[in-house]
Length: 280
Image (cartoon, rainbow, N blue to C red; front, side, top):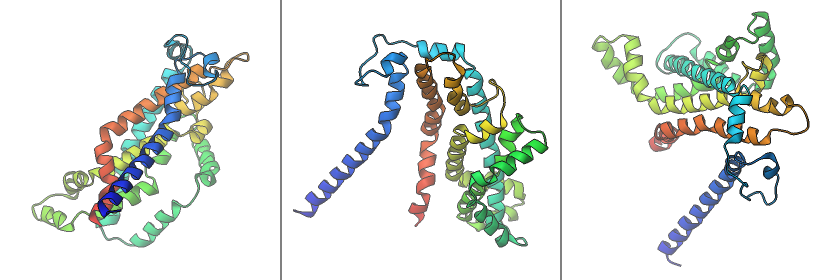
């Protein structure tokens, strides 16, 4: 077999593996969307790909009118957006300081910062909840935002990106009379946009999908977030019939902001993931 034929065979096998993996990943999502147009009885019919007797948006209508789903949706969207904005601001500032400034105990602080990423969230869950209770932040928006505005991983990520920015650019700006705030806003931020985009997507996803923490600190059907609300839908109905169709519709609508965010920012996100490989 010639080298060209071997190369074409390898490319074909690679494409087969990628397409197969994509189909396996998309299959549960496609079934979820498909099932959202079925009744509960039709969802459990075999084979599962049988079409519904009548395509209907009844599950979506019932979800939006019979549940507090709009409140859950708005709560999750607001919390995720606010947390993302704060994380981008504070992590980029802290990363800027660690990457470009010299100060006492800088290396020790950075080692402690990296070490904190090794602590499982479950280990700090109870102490954090006790702290929120003592300062009366239970069932308060502050408890959903303040503890997460400066994650160690975000600071580390931004520090690595900002380190790649040539210090000569900063020195030239200082010679021209630029302040440190202006250097940060007009030089650092534009140059590390792929990193900011990567951090924004990861932060939004983490906040949007968060379940354990909102379950602990939020009380009331109209203040909880989407993951908590969807998880409690089955327990809020009376009788034996579970609202599986409405739950499929709820899960389908949950994926919309995430997909939209990735579509809008995918170019910067992919650049952020591959910048290290490009630079060697």
